[in-house]
Image 1 (cartoon, rainbow, N blue to C red):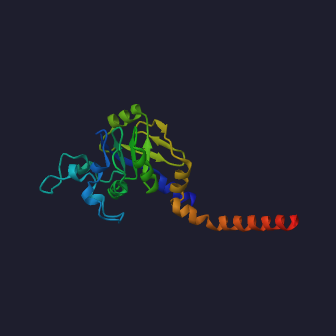
Image 2 (image 1 turned 120 degrees about the horizontal axis):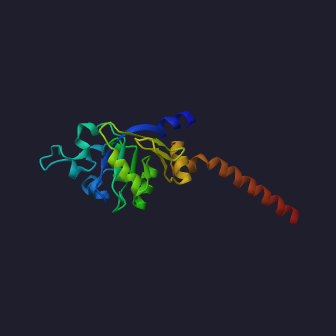
Length: 209
């Protein structure tokens, strides 16, 4: 991926939606009955299914994602300890399918964080104070700026804060790859190294004979 493309994908301004609930677990993000598929696409409409729809299947007008002003939001600002519970990649797939590119919280479950980074969803961890400020500043038109390369988040009032991203995960996201893609991309280098190592070993062995 070129620098220009990386800037386009991972340096962006976006509207955000607030889900203040704390300890949102993966079963609430995507209920277990939707886990039968291995397809990463198509789960967006099922994100937060049991909160998002009424018993008759109609949209719950009181749920935040169903409000008109939430449509098109690309950043989810969520309460403390987001993504807890069982390991469930489908939770990340559902959030991505719902249009989210990043989730902001004060803490994430470790397994959810790993699944998110491995599937192109950026978990942005901020302090409880910054999270509370983001929630209080929210309006239907509020935007934040995400800059993955700089590891910064700019709030609606212009304040910029840093967030942690593991270097390897940042590399993969900025270059549009994952762990498997990275390994495949370096396989030729590894083969050349092994061949050179064998050649050097053979030369040393011949000299010692």
